[in-house]
Image (cartoon, rainbow, N blue to C red; front, side, top):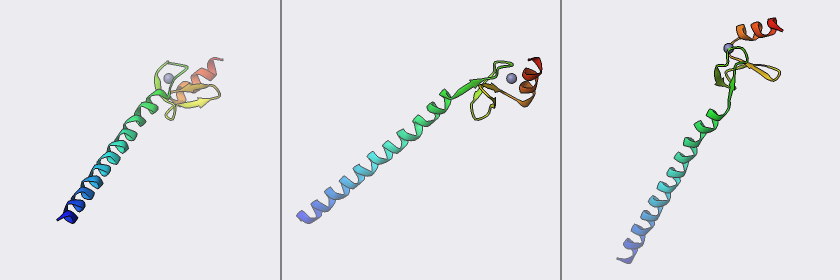
Length: 76
Ligand SMILES: [Zn+2]
């Protein structure tokens, strides 16, 4: 009888550990979009905000499109 009890306790412990592990994994994925949102740049020409990865970089400046990069460079 004690064997069955021990097995039951082992199963409960394993289930509890698995649930905790899954909760930690979910927390990890939730914090990622926040990090991405901070990484924003603004177009030097029109001022629109966009993710750094979507922008076109020319030295220290960022542009929302190739057209705005050309217009900015033509003005100088
Ligand atoms: Zn622009």
